[in-house]
Image 1 (cartoon, rainbow, N blue to C red):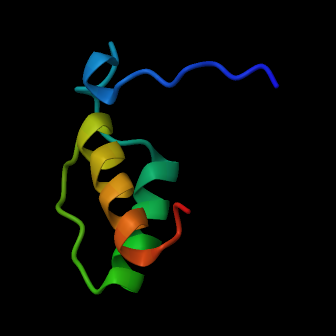
Image 2 (cartoon, rainbow, N blue to C red):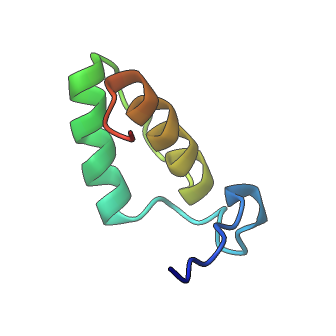
Image 3 (cartoon, helix red, strand yellow):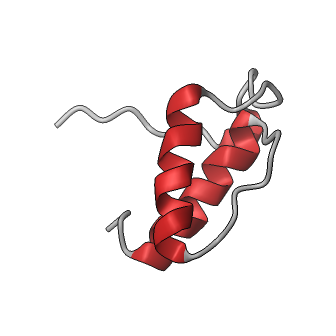
Amino acid sequence: MNRTPEKDPQDWTTGDEPMTGPQESYLSTLAQEAGEEVPAELTKVEASQLIDRLQEKTGRGT
C-alpha cells in the first residue's frame, strides 16, 4: 500500500484560512454527538485539531 505521510496541520501553508465547508459540516456532526459547541470562525488548522479531539471523544476516528 502506497500511503502518503500526513502533514502536520501546523505545517499547512493554508492553515490560517477559514475552515472548509466539509470541515464545518463534519464538526457540527461530531460536536452534536459529543455534546459540545463548535466555536465560530475556526481556521483550517483549528478545525482539524478539533476534529481529531472530537473523533477521539466519540470513537469515530478509530
